[in-house]
Structure formats: C-alpha cells, structure tokens
Image (cartoon, rainbow, N blue to C red):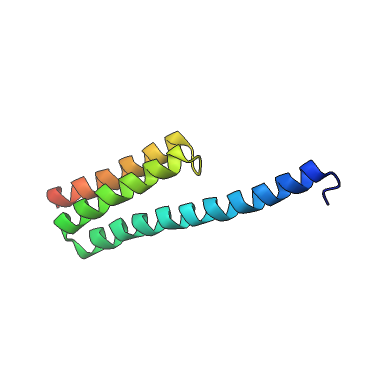
Length: 89
C-alpha cells in the first residue's frame, strides 16, 4: 500500500491509465476481429474496408503506447497478407 502522498497519487494515475489502455486494447481487438469475420465470409471489398479501419486503430494503439511498434506492424502485415491472399483463391 502506498504511504506517501506522491505514491498515492501515482497509484491513482496508474489506475486511470490502466483503464484507458484496457479500453484502447479492447477497441483495437474488436476491429481486428471485424477483419477476421470479413475474411471468413469471403467478401473481399468488406475485408479491405475493415482492414483500413483496423490498421488505423492498430497504429493509434502504437502511438498511444498500448502496444509496441513492431507488434502493430506485424499485426497489420499479417492481416493485409490474409486479405491479399483472398484474390489468389
């Protein structure tokens, strides 16, 4: 338990930041799931549109420090490869 006033304040700040990051992470995952669902239906136009919004959300999460830069790039790369492979099949 925090003893000093500065430690108590930091505990409050961390609690707020954790809640905000959790919301951002949840939002990011939702958009990734929308891309997965569009890929599963086989609708390429819908998948491309979902990919654009998911990429934006992933990069926003990167800029806010929710996920690492390379993690965001990897997720975007893998999603775009899956959407791109829909034309081949």
